[in-house]
Length: 219
Image (tube, rainbow, N blue to C red):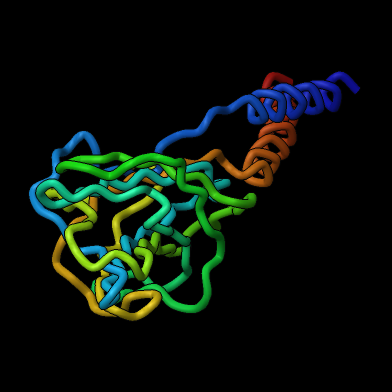
C-alpha cells in the first residue's frame, strides 16, 4: 500500500510541476545579428519559410519570433505581414506542404530599419508532435511591392529540442524552392502534457519495482 501511494504521490508532484512549466526555446538563431536578408514581397509574391524538426518530445507551440527589416527609409505596419505553420518534409531537400496547420497573431507595430524582432503567437492551441518537421511560412500583403525582408544569419538556428531543416523562398504558398540561407527566427513551446504524464507514470511504476528488487536482494 505504501509503495502504491508513493507512486501516486510521485505522479501528482510531477504533473503539478509540469503544469507550471514556462515556455522554453526549442531552437533559435539569436543572439546572432543579421548578415543579409531575403525579400518578402506581396506583388509579385515572394514568400519565405524556415523549417525545423522536433526531437523526441512533443511541445505545445507558444510563440515564434522572426527578424524583419525594411530597406532605406521604407516603413511597413506589421499588419502587412502574415505567418502560418505548415507541415512538410525535412532533410536536405525538404519543403513545406499542404494547408496551414495554425496561423499566428502578429502584434501591432512598425517595421523600419535593419532589425525588427517580432514575436507572434498562435491563434489557437497547437501541439507539435515529436520527430515531425514543421515550416514557419511568412508572406506579405499584396500592397507590398518591395523593400520588406526577413533577415538571415551566418549560422543556422540551433536548440536543445529541434534542428534546423533549411529554408525555401518563391512565389508559391507555401514556397517550394530551397535556398542556401538561414532565416533569423526562434520557436518557443511548452512540453505537451501527455509526454509529462507518460514520464510520471513510468516513474511512479518504476520506483516501487526498484524498491521490491532491492528488498529481495537484502533477503
